[in-house]
Length: 201
Image 1 (cartoon, rainbow, N blue to C red):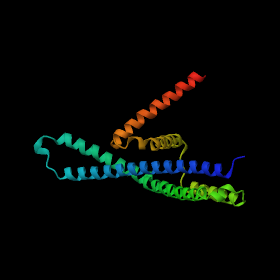
Image 2 (image 1 turned 90 degrees about the horizontal axis):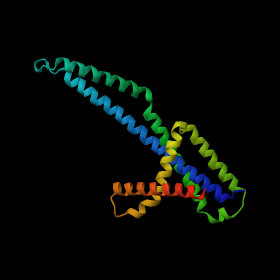
Image 3 (image 1 turned 180 degrees about the vertical axis):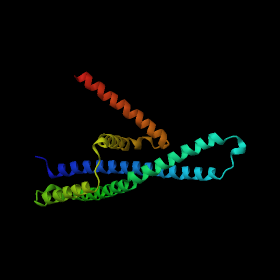
Image 4 (image 1 turned 90 degrees about the vertical axis):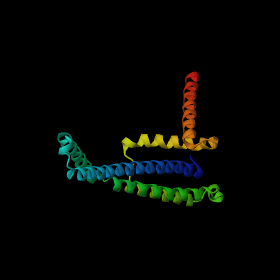
């Protein structure tokens, strides 16, 4: 039977993972929404700019007509995609979920810092866990990580945690160089584990 402390730590690991996953998904959706908005703005400026441009005297007539048609198609496609995608709404939902999970993490940290509560076996333990689980279930009503994104975002979280443990070893390097070194080190460690596993078998 798992102890109260073990259950708290297990929930904290899960909450940490969900914070990373929802934050990453939020950032991806915001970035995509900005790209679509920028594409619409740039395409609109180009179409408006060349509409009143006298290009017949330059011998560019056919080419510019074709270019305007292409840009117009891009503008319409980007506008339709942007209006039906709900990227900003979905990004806001993931942001809310990440904030709510951060609040749950604070609750768990407060429990873990209370040594007397962790050491005792009161019924209050069950109530605290129920309250935490109820909050996690309520967050799932706001936003969930889709099945197709889950493994990718879980991999991102696990790699981020590995980097967090390593980053202190590269204080003298700029972050891009430190990140490259951490990637190389993690790759070597992973290969080493695979090799040890083969040797053991």
